[in-house]
Image 1 (cartoon, rainbow, N blue to C red):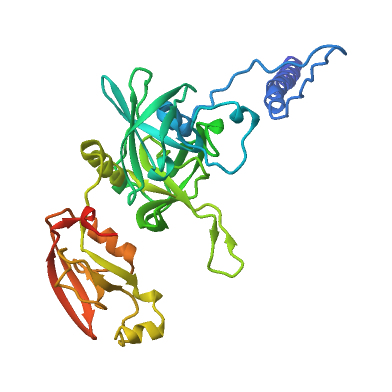
Image 2 (cartoon, rainbow, N blue to C red):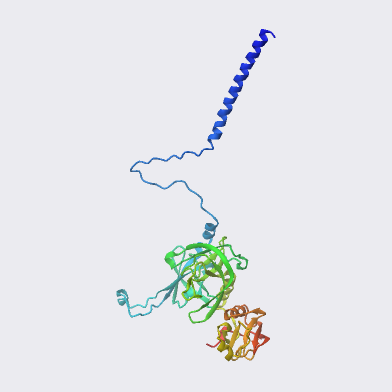
Length: 406
Protein backbone atom coordinates (compact mmCIF):
# COMPACT_ATOMS: atom_id res chain seq x y z
CA UNK A 1 0.00 0.00 0.00
CA UNK A 2 1.38 3.39 -0.93
CA UNK A 3 2.19 6.01 1.62
CA UNK A 4 -0.43 8.24 -0.01
CA UNK A 5 -3.25 5.71 0.65
CA UNK A 6 -2.22 5.23 4.27
CA UNK A 7 -2.31 8.98 4.84
CA UNK A 8 -5.77 9.22 3.25
CA UNK A 9 -7.19 6.50 5.58
CA UNK A 10 -5.91 8.35 8.67
CA UNK A 11 -7.57 11.57 7.50
CA UNK A 12 -10.93 9.79 6.93
CA UNK A 13 -10.68 8.15 10.39
CA UNK A 14 -10.09 11.47 12.12
CA UNK A 15 -12.99 13.08 10.21
CA UNK A 16 -15.33 10.21 11.20
CA UNK A 17 -14.41 10.66 14.88
CA UNK A 18 -15.09 14.37 14.64
CA UNK A 19 -18.50 13.83 12.96
CA UNK A 20 -19.59 11.25 15.55
CA UNK A 21 -18.53 13.50 18.42
CA UNK A 22 -20.42 16.45 16.98
CA UNK A 23 -23.55 14.33 16.42
CA UNK A 24 -23.45 13.01 20.01
CA UNK A 25 -23.10 16.50 21.42
CA UNK A 26 -25.96 17.75 19.29
CA UNK A 27 -28.23 14.87 20.40
CA UNK A 28 -27.45 15.56 24.05
CA UNK A 29 -28.24 19.23 23.62
CA UNK A 30 -31.59 18.44 22.00
CA UNK A 31 -32.52 15.83 24.62
CA UNK A 32 -31.76 18.05 27.61
CA UNK A 33 -34.93 20.23 27.36
CA UNK A 34 -37.08 17.08 27.18
CA UNK A 35 -35.75 15.79 30.47
CA UNK A 36 -35.97 19.26 32.05
CA UNK A 37 -39.74 19.51 31.33
CA UNK A 38 -40.40 16.53 33.61
CA UNK A 39 -39.16 18.46 36.62
CA UNK A 40 -41.65 20.33 38.84
CA UNK A 41 -41.49 24.06 38.11
CA UNK A 42 -40.25 26.16 40.95
CA UNK A 43 -43.04 28.26 42.46
CA UNK A 44 -42.23 31.91 42.52
CA UNK A 45 -43.57 33.65 45.63
CA UNK A 46 -44.23 37.30 45.08
CA UNK A 47 -42.72 39.41 47.81
CA UNK A 48 -45.05 42.10 49.16
CA UNK A 49 -44.11 45.37 50.65
CA UNK A 50 -44.53 45.65 54.40
CA UNK A 51 -47.55 47.96 54.27
CA UNK A 52 -49.08 46.63 51.05
CA UNK A 53 -52.77 45.56 51.32
CA UNK A 54 -53.98 42.04 50.63
CA UNK A 55 -56.23 41.77 47.58
CA UNK A 56 -58.41 39.05 46.05
CA UNK A 57 -57.27 37.15 42.97
CA UNK A 58 -58.27 38.54 39.60
CA UNK A 59 -58.40 35.05 38.13
CA UNK A 60 -62.03 34.04 37.52
CA UNK A 61 -63.43 30.51 37.24
CA UNK A 62 -66.72 29.23 35.82
CA UNK A 63 -68.32 27.25 38.68
CA UNK A 64 -71.59 26.67 36.86
CA UNK A 65 -72.83 23.08 37.23
CA UNK A 66 -76.07 21.12 36.89
CA UNK A 67 -77.18 22.04 40.42
CA UNK A 68 -76.68 25.77 39.99
CA UNK A 69 -78.51 25.62 36.65
CA UNK A 70 -81.47 23.80 38.24
CA UNK A 71 -81.68 26.31 41.10
CA UNK A 72 -81.41 29.33 38.81
CA UNK A 73 -84.31 28.00 36.75
CA UNK A 74 -86.82 27.93 39.62
CA UNK A 75 -85.54 29.97 42.58
CA UNK A 76 -87.34 33.18 41.61
CA UNK A 77 -90.64 31.28 41.70
CA UNK A 78 -90.07 30.23 45.33
CA UNK A 79 -91.77 32.38 47.97
CA UNK A 80 -92.21 32.67 51.73
CA UNK A 81 -95.76 32.31 53.05
CA UNK A 82 -96.55 34.33 56.18
CA UNK A 83 -99.57 33.41 58.31
CA UNK A 84 -101.09 36.27 60.38
CA UNK A 85 -103.54 35.70 63.23
CA UNK A 86 -104.97 37.64 66.15
CA UNK A 87 -102.47 37.40 69.02
CA UNK A 88 -103.55 35.34 72.00
CA UNK A 89 -103.99 37.26 75.23
CA UNK A 90 -101.61 35.65 77.69
CA UNK A 91 -102.08 38.34 80.32
CA UNK A 92 -99.05 40.28 79.14
CA UNK A 93 -98.99 43.35 76.93
CA UNK A 94 -95.98 45.38 75.94
CA UNK A 95 -95.87 49.15 76.36
CA UNK A 96 -96.47 49.58 72.64
CA UNK A 97 -99.51 47.30 72.76
CA UNK A 98 -100.95 49.12 75.77
CA UNK A 99 -100.79 52.39 73.86
CA UNK A 100 -102.23 50.82 70.74
CA UNK A 101 -105.98 50.25 70.69
CA UNK A 102 -105.91 48.50 67.31
CA UNK A 103 -106.40 44.78 66.88
CA UNK A 104 -103.37 44.30 64.63
CA UNK A 105 -102.56 40.76 63.57
CA UNK A 106 -99.30 39.06 64.42
CA UNK A 107 -97.20 36.47 62.62
CA UNK A 108 -98.44 33.05 63.74
CA UNK A 109 -96.23 30.99 61.45
CA UNK A 110 -94.20 30.96 58.25
CA UNK A 111 -93.63 28.47 55.49
CA UNK A 112 -92.72 28.27 51.83
CA UNK A 113 -94.50 28.03 48.50
CA UNK A 114 -93.84 27.92 44.78
CA UNK A 115 -95.54 29.86 41.97
CA UNK A 116 -96.69 27.47 39.25
CA UNK A 117 -99.02 29.53 37.02
CA UNK A 118 -99.46 33.11 35.85
CA UNK A 119 -102.40 34.71 34.03
CA UNK A 120 -102.94 38.31 32.92
CA UNK A 121 -104.17 39.37 36.36
CA UNK A 122 -103.08 36.70 38.85
CA UNK A 123 -100.33 34.29 39.70
CA UNK A 124 -101.01 31.05 41.58
CA UNK A 125 -98.82 29.34 44.13
CA UNK A 126 -99.05 26.08 46.07
CA UNK A 127 -98.13 25.50 49.71
CA UNK A 128 -99.15 23.17 52.56
CA UNK A 129 -102.51 23.44 54.29
CA UNK A 130 -100.81 23.36 57.69
CA UNK A 131 -98.78 26.45 56.71
CA UNK A 132 -101.90 28.62 56.33
CA UNK A 133 -104.13 26.89 58.93
CA UNK A 134 -106.10 29.45 60.94
CA UNK A 135 -104.75 32.39 58.94
CA UNK A 136 -106.70 35.63 59.10
CA UNK A 137 -104.35 37.24 56.62
CA UNK A 138 -101.67 35.83 54.31
CA UNK A 139 -98.66 37.70 53.00
CA UNK A 140 -96.39 36.34 50.29
CA UNK A 141 -92.74 37.40 50.29
CA UNK A 142 -91.36 37.14 46.77
CA UNK A 143 -87.79 36.09 45.95
CA UNK A 144 -86.98 39.80 45.54
CA UNK A 145 -87.91 40.39 49.19
CA UNK A 146 -91.04 42.37 48.34
CA UNK A 147 -94.26 41.38 50.12
CA UNK A 148 -97.69 41.14 48.49
CA UNK A 149 -101.04 40.09 49.91
CA UNK A 150 -102.24 36.58 49.15
CA UNK A 151 -105.79 35.30 48.75
CA UNK A 152 -106.59 31.71 49.71
CA UNK A 153 -108.35 29.90 46.85
CA UNK A 154 -108.82 26.65 48.70
CA UNK A 155 -107.10 24.04 50.83
CA UNK A 156 -107.37 20.33 51.52
CA UNK A 157 -106.46 18.91 54.92
CA UNK A 158 -106.08 15.31 53.83
CA UNK A 159 -103.63 16.08 50.98
CA UNK A 160 -102.04 18.99 52.93
CA UNK A 161 -102.22 21.14 49.80
CA UNK A 162 -103.41 24.76 49.58
CA UNK A 163 -103.60 27.19 46.64
CA UNK A 164 -103.11 30.95 46.99
CA UNK A 165 -103.34 33.66 44.34
CA UNK A 166 -101.49 36.98 44.17
CA UNK A 167 -101.34 39.89 41.74
CA UNK A 168 -99.38 38.88 38.63
CA UNK A 169 -97.58 42.15 37.89
CA UNK A 170 -94.47 41.40 39.98
CA UNK A 171 -94.14 37.73 39.03
CA UNK A 172 -91.45 37.00 36.44
CA UNK A 173 -90.86 33.26 36.91
CA UNK A 174 -93.11 30.22 37.30
CA UNK A 175 -92.08 26.66 38.10
CA UNK A 176 -92.73 23.57 36.00
CA UNK A 177 -94.04 20.29 37.43
CA UNK A 178 -92.29 17.04 36.55
CA UNK A 179 -94.02 13.69 36.05
CA UNK A 180 -93.38 12.28 39.53
CA UNK A 181 -94.28 8.77 38.34
CA UNK A 182 -91.00 8.79 36.39
CA UNK A 183 -88.58 9.76 39.17
CA UNK A 184 -86.08 7.19 40.42
CA UNK A 185 -84.60 6.34 43.80
CA UNK A 186 -81.09 7.76 43.98
CA UNK A 187 -81.62 10.73 41.67
CA UNK A 188 -80.71 14.23 42.81
CA UNK A 189 -83.28 16.09 44.91
CA UNK A 190 -82.94 19.80 45.72
CA UNK A 191 -85.11 21.67 48.24
CA UNK A 192 -85.61 25.44 48.12
CA UNK A 193 -87.48 27.28 50.86
CA UNK A 194 -87.43 29.34 54.02
CA UNK A 195 -86.18 27.18 56.90
CA UNK A 196 -86.96 28.88 60.23
CA UNK A 197 -88.86 31.60 58.38
CA UNK A 198 -88.42 34.28 55.74
CA UNK A 199 -85.19 35.51 57.33
CA UNK A 200 -83.56 32.53 55.60
CA UNK A 201 -85.64 32.71 52.41
CA UNK A 202 -84.42 30.92 49.28
CA UNK A 203 -82.18 28.51 51.17
CA UNK A 204 -81.00 25.64 48.97
CA UNK A 205 -80.18 22.12 50.20
CA UNK A 206 -79.36 19.03 48.17
CA UNK A 207 -79.65 15.29 48.58
CA UNK A 208 -81.22 12.35 46.79
CA UNK A 209 -84.59 10.67 46.42
CA UNK A 210 -84.37 8.05 49.18
CA UNK A 211 -87.59 6.14 48.50
CA UNK A 212 -90.96 6.37 46.79
CA UNK A 213 -94.58 5.74 47.83
CA UNK A 214 -94.05 6.16 51.56
CA UNK A 215 -97.23 6.48 53.64
CA UNK A 216 -96.86 9.29 56.17
CA UNK A 217 -99.61 9.42 58.81
CA UNK A 218 -100.20 12.46 61.02
CA UNK A 219 -102.92 14.38 62.85
CA UNK A 220 -104.48 17.59 61.59
CA UNK A 221 -105.20 20.51 63.91
CA UNK A 222 -108.81 19.33 64.28
CA UNK A 223 -107.64 15.83 65.25
CA UNK A 224 -108.36 14.21 61.88
CA UNK A 225 -106.04 11.37 60.90
CA UNK A 226 -104.42 12.17 57.56
CA UNK A 227 -102.40 9.76 55.48
CA UNK A 228 -100.18 11.09 52.73
CA UNK A 229 -98.42 9.28 49.92
CA UNK A 230 -94.94 10.79 49.89
CA UNK A 231 -91.47 10.90 48.35
CA UNK A 232 -88.77 10.28 50.95
CA UNK A 233 -85.54 12.31 50.71
CA UNK A 234 -82.40 12.89 52.74
CA UNK A 235 -82.30 16.52 51.58
CA UNK A 236 -82.04 18.79 54.63
CA UNK A 237 -85.55 20.00 55.51
CA UNK A 238 -86.41 22.23 58.47
CA UNK A 239 -89.49 24.03 59.83
CA UNK A 240 -90.31 26.72 57.29
CA UNK A 241 -89.42 24.54 54.29
CA UNK A 242 -92.99 23.20 54.35
CA UNK A 243 -94.83 24.01 51.15
CA UNK A 244 -91.70 24.72 49.15
CA UNK A 245 -90.57 22.78 46.08
CA UNK A 246 -88.42 19.67 45.89
CA UNK A 247 -86.86 19.82 42.43
CA UNK A 248 -84.88 17.51 40.16
CA UNK A 249 -81.59 18.27 38.44
CA UNK A 250 -83.52 19.76 35.49
CA UNK A 251 -85.14 22.35 37.76
CA UNK A 252 -88.61 20.76 37.61
CA UNK A 253 -90.77 20.39 40.73
CA UNK A 254 -91.01 16.70 41.66
CA UNK A 255 -92.76 17.28 44.98
CA UNK A 256 -94.06 19.76 47.56
CA UNK A 257 -92.07 19.51 50.77
CA UNK A 258 -94.40 18.63 53.64
CA UNK A 259 -92.73 17.10 56.70
CA UNK A 260 -89.78 15.35 58.27
CA UNK A 261 -89.19 12.78 60.99
CA UNK A 262 -86.99 14.12 63.77
CA UNK A 263 -87.27 11.32 66.31
CA UNK A 264 -88.55 7.79 66.65
CA UNK A 265 -90.74 6.60 69.50
CA UNK A 266 -89.88 2.95 68.93
CA UNK A 267 -87.67 2.98 72.00
CA UNK A 268 -88.32 4.18 75.54
CA UNK A 269 -85.84 7.02 75.28
CA UNK A 270 -86.64 7.93 71.68
CA UNK A 271 -84.08 7.99 68.89
CA UNK A 272 -82.95 11.10 67.04
CA UNK A 273 -83.49 10.77 63.30
CA UNK A 274 -81.65 12.60 60.51
CA UNK A 275 -82.20 12.68 56.79
CA UNK A 276 -85.84 11.59 56.65
CA UNK A 277 -87.84 14.28 54.91
CA UNK A 278 -90.98 13.88 52.83
CA UNK A 279 -92.64 15.60 49.89
CA UNK A 280 -96.05 15.23 48.25
CA UNK A 281 -95.45 13.88 44.69
CA UNK A 282 -96.01 16.43 41.94
CA UNK A 283 -98.70 14.33 40.23
CA UNK A 284 -100.71 14.09 43.45
CA UNK A 285 -100.27 17.82 44.11
CA UNK A 286 -101.39 18.79 40.59
CA UNK A 287 -104.54 16.67 40.92
CA UNK A 288 -105.47 18.52 44.14
CA UNK A 289 -104.43 21.91 42.74
CA UNK A 290 -106.78 21.58 39.76
CA UNK A 291 -109.71 20.68 42.03
CA UNK A 292 -108.98 23.55 44.40
CA UNK A 293 -108.77 26.05 41.53
CA UNK A 294 -112.09 24.82 40.16
CA UNK A 295 -114.13 24.20 43.32
CA UNK A 296 -112.16 25.71 46.20
CA UNK A 297 -112.23 22.28 47.84
CA UNK A 298 -111.68 18.58 47.15
CA UNK A 299 -114.75 16.35 47.13
CA UNK A 300 -113.95 12.81 48.26
CA UNK A 301 -116.18 9.74 48.54
CA UNK A 302 -117.18 8.40 51.96
CA UNK A 303 -118.14 4.94 53.19
CA UNK A 304 -119.77 6.27 56.34
CA UNK A 305 -118.06 4.13 58.97
CA UNK A 306 -116.27 4.72 62.24
CA UNK A 307 -113.28 2.45 62.44
CA UNK A 308 -110.17 1.29 64.30
CA UNK A 309 -107.00 -0.56 63.37
CA UNK A 310 -107.24 -4.24 64.28
CA UNK A 311 -103.56 -4.18 65.27
CA UNK A 312 -104.37 -1.65 68.02
CA UNK A 313 -106.94 -3.87 69.73
CA UNK A 314 -105.97 -5.82 72.84
CA UNK A 315 -106.74 -9.53 73.17
CA UNK A 316 -109.67 -8.67 75.48
CA UNK A 317 -111.09 -6.19 72.94
CA UNK A 318 -110.77 -8.76 70.16
CA UNK A 319 -112.71 -11.29 72.25
CA UNK A 320 -115.48 -8.77 73.02
CA UNK A 321 -115.73 -8.00 69.31
CA UNK A 322 -115.93 -11.68 68.47
CA UNK A 323 -112.72 -11.56 66.44
CA UNK A 324 -111.21 -14.87 67.42
CA UNK A 325 -109.43 -15.81 64.20
CA UNK A 326 -105.75 -15.89 65.23
CA UNK A 327 -104.68 -15.80 61.59
CA UNK A 328 -106.27 -12.36 61.20
CA UNK A 329 -103.40 -10.04 62.14
CA UNK A 330 -104.31 -6.76 60.44
CA UNK A 331 -107.27 -4.92 58.96
CA UNK A 332 -109.80 -2.20 59.77
CA UNK A 333 -112.51 -2.93 62.33
CA UNK A 334 -115.94 -1.39 61.65
CA UNK A 335 -117.12 0.16 64.93
CA UNK A 336 -120.36 1.59 63.52
CA UNK A 337 -122.01 2.75 60.29
CA UNK A 338 -123.75 6.04 59.59
CA UNK A 339 -127.38 5.81 58.56
CA UNK A 340 -128.05 6.59 54.91
CA UNK A 341 -124.43 6.36 53.78
CA UNK A 342 -122.96 3.65 51.48
CA UNK A 343 -121.85 1.19 54.20
CA UNK A 344 -125.21 1.29 55.99
CA UNK A 345 -126.86 -2.12 55.65
CA UNK A 346 -123.79 -3.52 53.87
CA UNK A 347 -121.23 -3.70 56.66
CA UNK A 348 -121.88 -4.57 60.30
CA UNK A 349 -120.26 -3.71 63.61
CA UNK A 350 -117.00 -5.64 64.14
CA UNK A 351 -116.60 -6.63 60.50
CA UNK A 352 -112.88 -6.50 59.65
CA UNK A 353 -112.08 -4.97 56.25
CA UNK A 354 -109.01 -6.63 54.73
CA UNK A 355 -109.06 -5.65 51.05
CA UNK A 356 -110.25 -2.81 48.80
CA UNK A 357 -110.54 -3.67 45.10
CA UNK A 358 -108.51 -6.80 45.76
CA UNK A 359 -105.61 -4.89 47.34
CA UNK A 360 -104.70 -5.63 50.96
CA UNK A 361 -105.42 -2.85 53.47
CA UNK A 362 -103.97 -3.13 56.95
CA UNK A 363 -104.67 0.27 58.51
CA UNK A 364 -107.01 3.25 58.37
CA UNK A 365 -104.44 5.15 56.28
CA UNK A 366 -104.38 2.27 53.77
CA UNK A 367 -108.17 2.37 53.51
CA UNK A 368 -108.21 6.14 53.04
CA UNK A 369 -105.55 5.95 50.33
CA UNK A 370 -107.50 3.27 48.45
CA UNK A 371 -110.88 4.98 48.90
CA UNK A 372 -109.65 8.46 47.90
CA UNK A 373 -108.40 7.20 44.56
CA UNK A 374 -112.11 7.03 43.62
CA UNK A 375 -114.71 9.72 43.05
CA UNK A 376 -118.33 9.97 44.14
CA UNK A 377 -120.39 7.65 41.96
CA UNK A 378 -117.73 4.92 41.64
CA UNK A 379 -118.30 1.37 42.84
CA UNK A 380 -115.65 -0.39 44.94
CA UNK A 381 -115.13 -3.99 46.01
CA UNK A 382 -114.68 -4.60 49.75
CA UNK A 383 -113.42 -7.86 51.22
CA UNK A 384 -114.12 -8.32 54.93
CA UNK A 385 -114.14 -10.97 57.64
CA UNK A 386 -117.31 -11.58 59.68
CA UNK A 387 -117.29 -14.20 62.46
CA UNK A 388 -114.24 -15.79 60.89
CA UNK A 389 -115.76 -16.06 57.41
CA UNK A 390 -114.45 -14.01 54.46
CA UNK A 391 -116.96 -12.17 52.26
CA UNK A 392 -116.72 -9.74 49.32
CA UNK A 393 -119.33 -7.12 48.38
CA UNK A 394 -119.61 -4.21 45.95
CA UNK A 395 -120.55 -0.82 47.38
CA UNK A 396 -121.48 2.24 45.32
CA UNK A 397 -119.96 5.46 46.67
CA UNK A 398 -123.01 7.70 46.60
CA UNK A 399 -121.89 10.19 49.26
CA UNK A 400 -118.95 12.46 49.98
CA UNK A 401 -117.00 13.31 53.13
CA UNK A 402 -119.19 16.41 53.45
CA UNK A 403 -122.04 14.10 54.43
CA UNK A 404 -120.20 12.59 57.37
CA UNK A 405 -121.45 13.41 60.84
CA UNK A 406 -118.97 14.53 63.48
